[in-house]
Every structure is written in structure tokens, then in C-alpha cells.
Length: 167
Length: 331
Image (cartoon, rainbow over all chains, first blue to last red):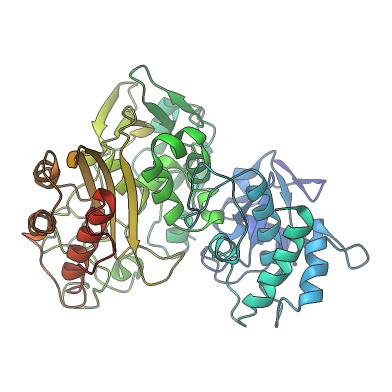
């Protein structure tokens, strides 16, 4: 069974119980994606599948034949960081850093959702344009917990990148 | 997770044949895998139905919509037709879970999600839903999130979802395929069950049956609201939720359809409430009468007693907003 991880073709033939999260961390050595709760509550395991964010802990690798997976390692490198990674560093958008890869993957997908005009629960006009306020951002990022409570700096970092992208 | 065999199905008939006795369908998997990790669910076989051609939202002959069972919650809530003509559905979906989960969770799977009762989730505790005959830990235990309507002495669990509450208000249908190829359509309001003496059965699906689609009637118009009361502002299940579709004409209520979440083992719909409101002039007295009907048979179990006044106040607030009567005044 084939899938693509960060642009590279990969094969999976293992135990059907292997979650995508465990496949990434244990079989591919991509330990940037973190295991927090392992039940879809914390968001530390957030990766992009065909550009959309999901909890990699709540999906089986077997179910991703032909899919394109992007992890934090696929977004940027220390030498060439993604704008969100740079912004998190600039704004100190973390303390321990454990939730950070999930926060950044989630934020990247969120900006794409805003660009696509997806409403959220706090959007007043479901048919109108979406403006990324702090309230919108908090609602849209509620699937990513930060036990250190670095939320205010996380919000600042994401809003800065959103502003640069015109969201 | 316990070991299981993984199979893929190409169509509904194959899926029904593969699932057999100890098998389970998997679509988004966001609830099922959670439960399998806790060994609340221990299927011998997972039948992956993600390749069934059920991922589109199509217009129906009567002017409604048919939402394929594999349409994700995100895709459904973002669909321009849903946002324009069925805003209560978009709002209810967006009130549930997180974007990460809604990107995987499907329309059919969402209908089949299990209760979040703590005793159901903990395999060390008695639970008639998980293991019939073992008793109910929630009755006499911690039951803050539990049901006040339609309970039995076997089970006081709630159906936890938001989407189905809006679908109940909209009077949606569910299209189901049997393993022998036959199809049936049932009202969404009849899809979920009350616990009675068989709380292990959440809904009326027979073994091997696959949900094909949820069908929406032609747009009802009017004011459409989804009010959800919960412990956090985001990513929390409803303590009480109300979906309301209310159309006003010349100062009176031309049509009203309401459904309630967080109160029962199924999305709660009481036709007497819709009948009371339809054709009536909005008034505080009328809204109190509606609340009396809703809560006539309500029973608290200690921890959830607060849901009775909470449901009353939430209903009155929703009716005020929907009809424009004394909006903003305390209930």
C-alpha cells in the first residue's frame, strides 16, 4: 500500500492497527508529530492529509492509500522555516513546545480554510466573507490545546502570518 | 486495540456481506477508533466503506438535497446550498467537535456516534449499553451530562451529537441499504431509539445495513437557530441544545419545528410543541406552555437536575430570538 509523506513515496505493509500517527513516528522516524492524548482531544498529532488537517491518532494508516501527508518536517527546516514557524519563534508562541508542531500544521490548514471561505460557529453571516478576528481564530484553533497556556502568543503569531497573507 | 482484520468494500452490498456478525463499518473513524483504543468496541473485522460512491451532495427531484453518507461534516457545513438554505444544519455541525475531527467525520458516521456517558467509556464500570445485563453506573452515580427525557431503568445515556438535532428539526430522512440490495427510507426522527430494555441498540439499523444518504426536504425558510449550552465555548458536548426553524407571517408563527439535544437518548422532537406554536401569536405565556410540554415527563437523576430549568430557559430564549418577542429580557 502506497502513500506520500512530505513529497516522498512510502510503502506500508504492517499491522492494520497502526495509526497514521504511529506510522509517522515509529516507521518513518518523523517524530515532529507528537502523541499527546491519542484520542483526538489535544491536537498535538495534527497533520495535513491532501491539504486538510486531521488528528493522525484517530485514523489508520491502511485508510490512506494514495493520500499525500504533510507533517511539520514537510513545512520547513531550521535553515528554511515556514513563515508560521518563524512567527512562532518571533512571538514566543510556546513554552515546552510539545503542542507546537500540531499548532503550526493546524494553523496552516486554517488559513487555507479561511481562503476557501469556510464559516465557523462564531461567523455571524454564514454566506458572507470571513474575517480572521481573535474570536474566529480561537474557535477555529480549539482543537489544539496548549497546556503551558501560550495561547496569546500563539494567536499573535498566527494573526501576523494571516495578515501577511491577507486573510 | 484488539487485533482485527481490515477489509475494503466497493459498494453497499459488498460492505453488508463483509461486515457479518462481529464486524464494524469504518468511515471517518473518529469515534470508532477512540472506542477501539479503550476496548469499548472490539470488532473482529473492520470494513472500510470510504470507497463507496457516497461523497456528494445532490439536488433531489422535490427541490431538497441528498447528502451522501460519506460527505464530511466540514464539506457539508461549507456547502453554499447548506449555508444558504439550511443554516441550522451548518450551524449545528460547526457547533460540534473541532475542524480536525469534522474533516474526517462523515454524515452517516456522525449519526451513528456513541454516547459519551462516562460509564459506557470505562470498561471497568457496569453499563447496559456496552454490556447488556451488567447494570447502569450512571443511575445513582455521576450523571451531570445524562438524559432527563425518555430514560429507562436500564440506561440514562444521551445521544451526544449536534448535526442530528438540526436534521430532526428539518425533518430530514435517512436512506438505508440492506445487504440484499433493497433500500428503505425512514424519517431521521425515527432513526435513533429510546433505550427501553435494549440500550445496546442506539438506532434502528439492522445488521449489515449501510446508510447511503441523508435527505433534506425543500428549504423551509424562516429563521433558523442552533443554540448550544455547554461547559466551554468551543469543543464541548451539549448540555442542552435546541435547533429551531421558525417562520413568521403577519406577527404570528406560520410554522415552527424544534428539536432538542443533550436531553435524551435520541434527538428529541415533540410534535405537540410544533403544533402548539404553529399558528399562534408569540407571547411569554405561549413559550412557557411550550416548555411545560417539553418537560412534562422530565426526570432528574441528581447530577443532571439542573438540565430541567436550563432546558426551560433555553427554549424560551430561543423562541424569543426566533420570533423577535422581548428579545434579550431574562426568561
